[in-house]
Image 1 (cartoon, rainbow, N blue to C red):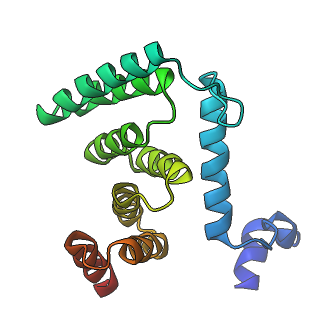
Image 2 (image 1 turned 30 degrees about the vertical axis):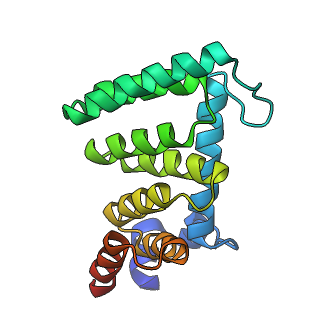
Length: 176
């Protein structure tokens, strides 16, 4: 191997290697996802830490937009539903079900990283949210991150030990 690398890149091939990570890859990926989510929120003018509580008017507007999104999901119009849920979250960014609903749309649109981000946001507000754990596990499965998938399913099963969908998905990924 050394000979092949020396022939391909010259005697300084070792200097071209990336540094050996001291932080496990899975941890670095999670940190990168969190940083991307925080950056996206700051880009949208939303910062979790200093977000003011929504007014009654904002809560009502957010609820109406969420319901429009729900109707679009029933019609299978996931991209339009994502837009409604996104508008809803701008009015009330602390509504857990809006995040889990938008994550469902992202799963249907095969936008798995976006689904993971929304589920993670929901779980920061409600750490035992079954839908967020299940949908994030589904997204991890599609991205071939079996360890993260199993971790989410195990967390879900601590909350709901007899959740048949989670048990089935866990069996499925453990066969691989």
